[in-house]
Image (tube, rainbow, N blue to C red; front, side, top):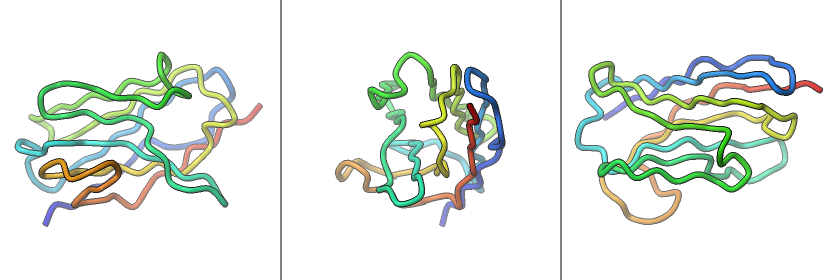
Amino acid sequence: QVQLVESGGGLVQAGGSLRLSCEASTSIFGMNRMGWYRQAPGKTREMVAVASEDGTTYYDFSVKGRFTISTDNAKNTVYLQMNSLKPEDTAVYFCAAARYYRGPGIYDYWGQGTQVTVSS
């Protein structure tokens, strides 16, 4: 029932920053997990960052210390702040939401994705 729409992607030079937004059609209160995933051409979709209901966050090693996931429940929006971007961060970034935890990568809702391209 929930629709997710990502925005904020674009072209940026290496070392630059971007902030991705994911706006939900309904309240994100009650979601057990909000996550950001990414997929580069020819590669499998991979986890980037996840925020759990209790406030715990998880990051892939490749982005740890550079990316930050956060939520704004009043705006029904989850963000991904990306700093010190590298060319290898180039991918389509997807937002996802799960009502309850069922396993890694298992979500009830997915956004359409937003392209992030990092040039050297």
